[in-house]
Amino acid sequence: MHVEVKHPLIGHKLTLVRDKTTGVKLFRELIGEITMFLAYEALRGIPTESIEVETPLAVAKGVRVKGEIVLVPILRAGVGMLDAVMDMVPNARVGFLGLYRDHETSLPVEYYAKLPPATPGAVAILIDPMLATAGSAVAAVSMLKKRGFETIVFVCIVSCPEGVARLEQAHPDVAIYTASIDDGLNASKYILPGLGDAGDRLFGTK
Image (cartoon, rainbow, N blue to C red):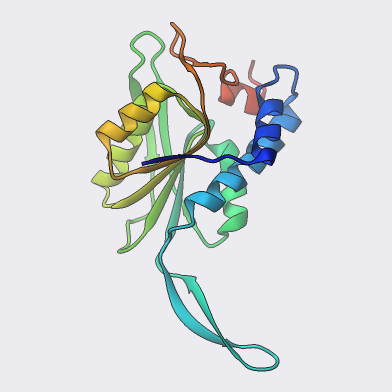
């Protein structure tokens, strides 16, 4: 299942993110703002339980989140989305997965993994700005499943039909939330029109 989250403010901010003249500071801020919109939708179905609280005037029925939320950015670009989700769920635990795409084979290469334990009912939110070939996403989801996570949601800024289809085929139980499903991949396996290399633009490394 995938959801392309449509909203005028997302469209406005995404246009600025795509603009090659947008500087590092504004790019980071926009990525965070778009991530908050996406996280709002991605967290809509998390488990809750009923509770009662006392207001200054009476007892009110309410809900609270049931079970742990674990945020897992794929290094390094996923770190640019982390703070925005943590602002929404400050009690979330955080894990990190280090994967990069080999530019010759386009296959994911794992170089780091540090995750909290998968507690019963935990929801893992995997974050990465781009879903291109989906090689890293497929590998990251497999890593989470091997460590006991059963409910996994993937959140990205920009995706493409090839990446969405591959992730859904490999892991049909993982919901995908994205701000845009772009046209496709070029010969170098970059998303078109895309936004360039998200990691380089987030951290000013190019």
